Amino acid sequence: MQENENNSRRSFLKSAATFAVAAAVTPVALAGEPGQQKKPVVTVKDDRSNSGRIRVAVLGVNGRGKSHIEEIMGISEKSNVEVAVLCDPDMNVLQKAAADFETKYGKKVRIEQNFRKVFDDKTIDAVTLATPNHWHALLTIWACQAGKDVYVEKPATHNIHEGKKMIEAAYKYNRIVQHGVQLRSSVAIREAVKNLEDGVIGRVYMSRGLVYRWRPDIGDQGISQTPPGLDYDLWCGPAPMRPFTKNLVHYNWHWHWNYGNGDVGNQGIHETDLCMWGLGVKTLPERITSMGGKFLWDDCKEVPEIQTSIYHYPKERKIIQFEVRNWCTNAEDGAGVGNIFYGDKGYMVIKGYDTYETYIGQKKEKGPARSEKGELTLHFQNWLEAIRARDMTIQHAPVQTGHLSSALAHLGNISYRLGRQLEFDPVAERFIGEGENEANNMLSRDYRAPYLLPDVV
Image (cartoon, rainbow, N blue to C red; front, side, top):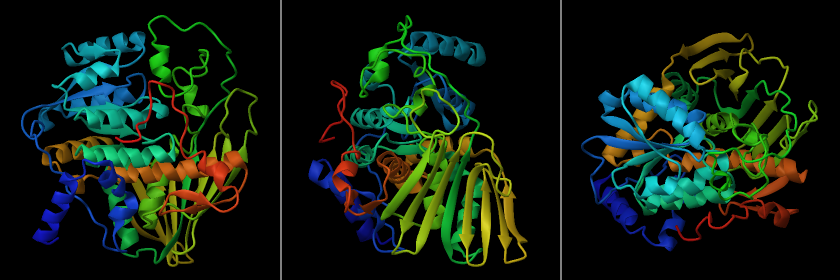
């Protein structure tokens, strides 16, 4: 990159304080001409996180947040970082997490039930988000506004419109926003994608995402009293305030549309991300169709147990297929959660987050392969390195990729819920053609006051 181009981009980003400029910073705008993707550099006025210890707050500590705590504390001395605050709307969960923290690490950790106190705390440099999906984007935006860098779990968003607002916020406030798809930092998977780009299986024209997970009947526990210690209003946040049920809190919200996105928007975001990355597509598709349903259980899940989605890129002559199966099924060349890429000279199988294999030609002769663990630790280290450098270009999973991989899942879910094939304009990120009005109404959601997604971030 030439120095004058570097200076120009830095000047552009510094001027991104207005909505009009921020709105122009989209994945399409950043893509540039084919093969010439522009990677802006983040520059900041303060250097608080560039030296000294990075103090992190973990928001949501019942499930995935436990891994965030373990990873950050595991690299605490090497990366000069620490978990300073735990935050969760359920005080029971919060107090147990704090007790476990003290037992494991030999020191106390501050707890907060309300995230607003975390955002107001000027001594907190960054936050990690492991809340339910419906909170991810809004908390990311508010964290950026508060001057915090963000590690946000997948999916980055609960709907497509949120992704564009997250991008605006990251650029306007010059924040490092890392999407929690750790396979982006896997040594083996990065090598696999490089091999795809180098033509090891020829011209790659199709990718498949596989999510074959064991998801049992969750029944229907009905309405009950809100448990003591849970701030249920805060838990619901921007979603509708429905009567409390154990079918939502604390895990099965994944299977209800107001809070989760089904398995394509849960485990599947790792795979939608890799589908796009390995296939080399940098925008959303033009044609989407998805079907499936509940064929197994008569429980209170709203999302499909079995779902097949097709995403077509006619101009690029490429296609993505995505399979969700929630019960008994075969693996495919050993992959149950993973990806398969097809080229005109062979195919590649991705198993989980850390293993790939290639098979060449009609005889399926073995090609390059690798298996290497440690990707989650590397992903957090990459985030922290980008924070210290104030440089998005060294991020493995920047905010744009979080928007696109999550949006791919949302497109499939919209097609499934409407029961029709849809046409999509990937530049405007709007549906077009038959059924466009109904589909475009599903690009966003109604937000419950005061938890409103801002029009201007």
